[in-house]
Amino acid sequence: MNILSNDKIRSVAILGGGPVASTLATLLARKGTKVGIWHRPRRAPLLVGESLVPAIIPMLQALGVEEDVRSFSTLKPGATFNLSEQVNFSFFFDQLSGGMPRYAYNVPRDRFDDTLLEAARKAGARIYDTAAKVERVAGTERVRLSAETLEAAGEFFSQPRI
Image 1 (cartoon, rainbow, N blue to C red):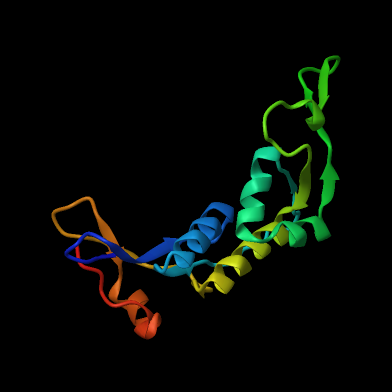
Image 2: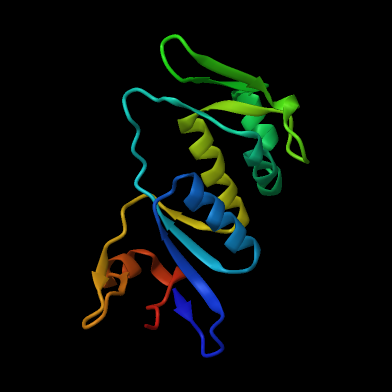
């Protein structure tokens, strides 16, 4: 990250491109921060879906991706917890109180990740399909992007000040 004398963060390097990283990149880029995501796409041979909860729906809406997520997901009106082989606890989200949505989704993880990463790209984040190399700053516990990684990023980033 590059910090100016007034302590305003101007650029951020994010290592990894999962849901949290992509969401952070989208929100930062929308606020005018220069964001680079170093993400080496890896796919497990068997992709397991994710079971989202209603509290995630407002974030999907804020990111502008709920309609995309809905298009490849299964609507989930409730949840079941298997407490033991004999005991299950089920409830419907319409029983929730407060302002929570009354639904959620089961999503295929690969498509969910791709959708959030694309939202970050559309917001202005630069995606590097490779792992970043970092190096320790001598005498500190801080790390920074290696010269090799910065060079591969071209003009997008300049060497961060530490």
